[in-house]
Length: 217
Image 1 (cartoon, rainbow, N blue to C red):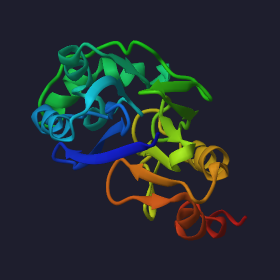
Image 2 (image 1 turned 180 degrees about the vertical axis):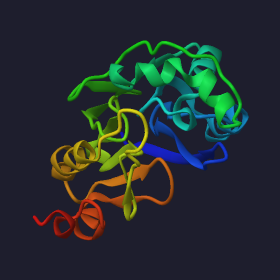
Image 3 (image 1 turned 45 degrees about the vertical axis):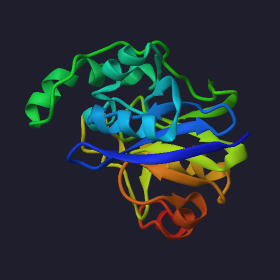
């Protein structure tokens, strides 16, 4: 059994919503459905995937806005993020109006996630790391056998998540990356919340914000 992934850019911010599925039973999940539900539904249909759950890395509107509506439509549960992002999810309707994006109702995830929790997906097990800094409740999903991680806005190719949002913390973000992600193994490829994929090895060597050279390691 192996985990497959298809990136679905959504919202005007081109956020990397992701469809994950087990290629043996075609059961799967959507990560970070921030909007454009029709586009997400088209991808689910085209891939022939039966949705099992919705997974959230954090509560920002471009990642979480459409989660409640999508989960309700498919009769599935929402898992993640960590409960420290509840204030962001509660504020989703106001944030949509503030930034001129479609407004969705707030919702309550069925399961808040903690560091080192596991998520069962289509017969596969995803490992959870709590990686605060961009938001206090940000989590990352890792499937180690497939060497794939869904990292949200913690780290990007050549960059890191912003920390000038409410309850952001730059030092905490760097610590999350270097202490909770890089030790997972350099060969792991990651899907960031925006932009192209990369690997932990590449970023550890070259990222100007969190590489060994950048932090003087």
